[in-house]
Image (cartoon, rainbow, N blue to C red):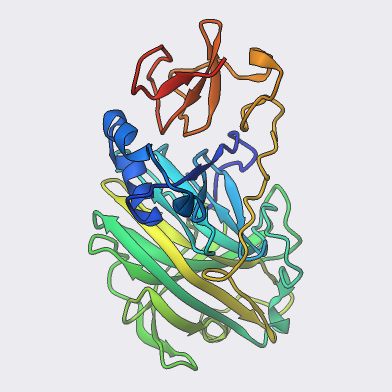
Length: 367
């Protein structure tokens, strides 16, 4: 149900956001909510102390950031509908995403963090995944997530895939297995088909919520939920694996477990700001950690991945390497464009505002 769009799509525009007068988390939320004139006042005068807590952001559809010492991949997964959404990673190791109010219907979006791989080949680069299902003796998820969402049709969900071959463009997945950790009042799959079906090693009671023949892909889709929803704790995922084997069936030991994904599905009428303080995965004696205290890598290091010069400063090349301003494009602080024979730099988030010479305006002439 949460296959992401092509992650080779939009240019990854990473910026650093600081605000001397507000915590970094709050400044990001205002970044999407406030208008241009208000942002002009709040982004000026950032102190050097605030700069030490700089946030790396990426706002393009399917953009990614490396987090957790590079073991995890944060994905701006705009699967269901186009919406203003950004992922971010802070210098203290925390990371997350935020999105403006979604108005379109359709399939959910699923901004997420990935450890391992997906059936279509997206991967974070760790050697623990994919792994034969029969070789998994330990699989635990420890999480602490701050969730601030307006609207009621959303969830916080973990999932993995079972595959009958190595990841490839066709997606060799046979099963999609989701554990819903927390959810809004309007998010429902009806009454659980098996309430209290599982109790794991940590005392978590887990309902088998529902099973579908598919969830947006051809794979069987099995959804579980915590009987007591929470945004922090530790869950033994092998308990769910055992239930799928014994109570649902159709899974062999040689099917490959893809990896672990955790994120928020959300539908129309929601806006949100989500922070991952801790997300750790223990598998077969090894623990991968992310969150506070981990080293953040912004993934592409500001390199121009598609060769169009849109990542950062164009250097001494004048406007030859700077993309032309486009009214439908989203620009963030530090992005440069060419327009009317000049180069302009965005001072904050903008879309549809034409560059021009004006004091306290989103675009400022630099060349």
